[in-house]
Image 1 (tube, rainbow, N blue to C red):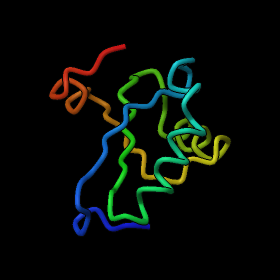
Image 2: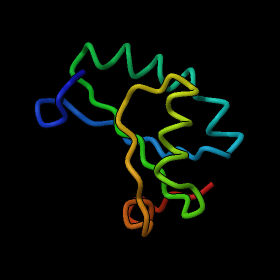
Image 3: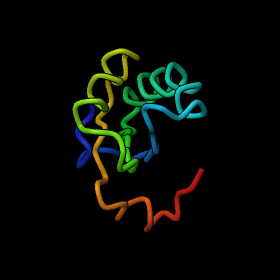
Length: 86
């Protein structure tokens, strides 16, 4: 796995465990991550849904074979800075 500090760039992906749109892209996100990780591009998943626990996020990643890092944005700080919405 690529180390973020040594990456050429970082892709930020907002993910939710119960969102049908996010879930429709699970396998595609993982494939893109695997293809670009080899090229020095890091991927970072962000979950900003206050209803989803860290344990559920971890389970969801395991169930869907998501191997890139996914962080919990508990107070929506990152989502707000990116003006992320659905």
